[in-house]
Amino acid sequence: MTVNVLTPKDITKKAFNREELFILDVRNESDFNDWKIEGENFEYLNVPYFELLDGVEEITGEIPTNKVVLVVCAKEGSSVMVAEMLSEAGLNVSYLKGGMKAWSEYLEPVKIGDLNDGGEIYQFVRIGKGCLSYMVLSEGEAAVIDSTRMTDIYIDFAKSKGTKITHVFDTHLHADHISGGRTIAEKTGATYWLPPKDATEVTFVYQPLEHGNDVAIGNTTINFETLYSPGHTIGSSSFIVDREYLLSGDILFINSIGRPDLAGKAEDWVADLRTTLYKRYRELSEDLIVLPAHFMMIDELNEDGSVAEKLGELFAKNHGLNINDENEFRKLVTKKLPPQPNAYQEIRETNMGKINPNLEKQREMEIGPNRCAVR
Image (tube, rainbow, N blue to C red):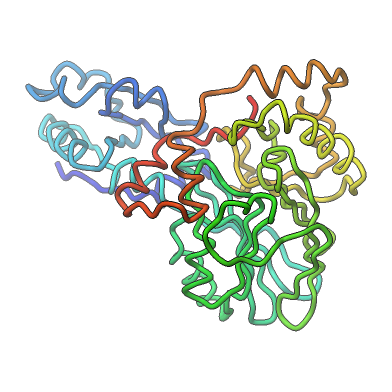
């Protein structure tokens, strides 16, 4: 039988559509337990490939014949080998092109909505990493927010829409992934904006992003308002776009809230986090649609694959927004935290411009799940 190939885009569509998929992951058990391809109706079997070097006879009975079967490894090579062995045993299987490395880097653009002046807003879902970035387009110009290091995707998408990227924003200095903001700005001539309180150690020129900034995109100002919202970092900022969308960065997620410890300042910043969530955000319209910079779990995706929810719904359902006791809140966000993101200190230094790792090193630094939230 032929060994089929499925791409990260193919698997993303299956995740968005809640399709069934059986995944045979042939990485080591610890790697699988730490980070895997997630889908609401995905099933898993983890058998390290070195256990299959002498044959696949012991697992053929565990592979379904009535579902799409995907073999996954870190970079592709081992999954091709195992898929070929299963095919020779009479099973119809596919392998993931590029392995988990490609899965980590894939971005799927999802249209969030139209803006009042005729513009549009798109969310780029990095489903394998849980990162969410954005593009606001209006009258031939575009702004990119919280971009990943896969910069050509944004540049090519803007070109396909007949627009030029003129502004690039980071809501804060990221610690879980390498920002593409500076690179996009260099390639397009766009202005790169960064909160100055997060930029005290950066080695490059940037435009200070401060409370109350309104930025023109196209010939009109799309009411692109900056809201200072510290807590995840000391400089964290949110954006209110078109009086309808709240881009919350890593301060507020759908089912959780941002962690304040990634710069080693948890005790110092927990009060800022509470003030932002319980005071600044409470003063905003509950009809604002929250667009975070990350998602934690696959079930946070809406039917169209987007990650978005009204602020009022989050006030009603998000546990992190409903802790009345300040001491309990402090304990939650300083003591009950998941492990730190992989290589987060090196990622911060890269985003400051202090170090410039090569592409392969950058890929290694970003391997693993998103861990920017309080669970």
